[in-house]
Length: 282
Image: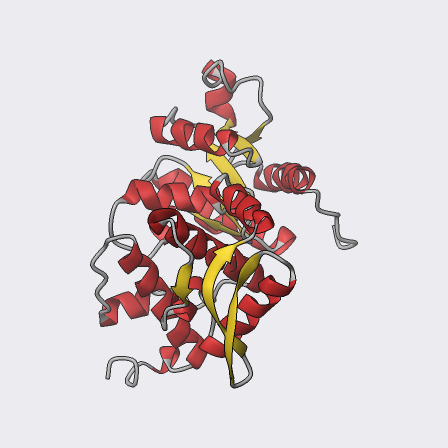
């Protein structure tokens, strides 16, 4: 009834997205509750995971199930689309068959299902699949977003990131910039943070306030071999620099007086880090 009365979430893909978010929270041992406020706060530009992310989610799911039991997965559960973020079961099954063709999954094929190909029984990862599974656990998958590590609730920094840095990164290189406040989930925040960093394309770290959390998140990302770019207020950096473990790393200095210069240098640094080509308009 709530969905029927909320026009913004009536589309099948939006319903599938909500199902995916709730299923993900449930599998992490949380107690997800859908409310009107939660729906309204769900960003309109949130989308289902792209096909590459669905592949990673599927391999992770099967790998975790097989690791836990020591036995092949008897069959894919009915909520597989919600687990991996697919719009429907036929889409999920087509992905399963594609991974079988690519020798990343194996199993016994059963009866055909409409559009999705045959059902699969006794499902396991192949050696290549297990290699991909281990890589995904170590942060080798990169989503279309960057993770922002920073001190929260600083009015100047919050506004600068929200109004200047985030929009510029989205416009110039097409990546969203997220921090933990953008994640619409309940539960243990540390687990969400690790997952967001693990699946990010890059991590942007502000060291203006010598925030211990930001340093920890940077170290975690460095350990996963993620591209990490440091930024800092120029006045602070000129006065006392940053911790000696980072003051030799690439640090893009920002100033509210010269935001355009900062954005140009930051975007160029991100492009080099992500191996992106410059556009003609730039």
